[in-house]
Length: 120
Image (tube, rainbow, N blue to C red; front, side):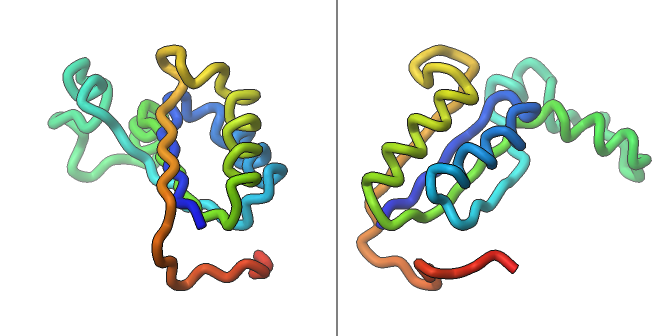
């Protein structure tokens, strides 16, 4: 088993990335809006002047500037390799700046993962 975490720099590519991951064999993905130190320093995210009671348009506008952090668990190195390949088809070469950061960690113990789970 492998835990895969990916921070996607460009949130507009999230839908394409999800389809690419599904094509690679991923059964489920958790997606979180996120930001990094660079964006905070540039005041592009998590600004202190974000309204206490924002309108829906203000929330949408604010969240679009955030990265997306995706994570999943897969059961084979073959799927990990396909996942990396498909990710780079969407984002470009991960060694270049402003694409994203991917981490793959072997899972010594995984609980709650069902190989044959169907999305309903």
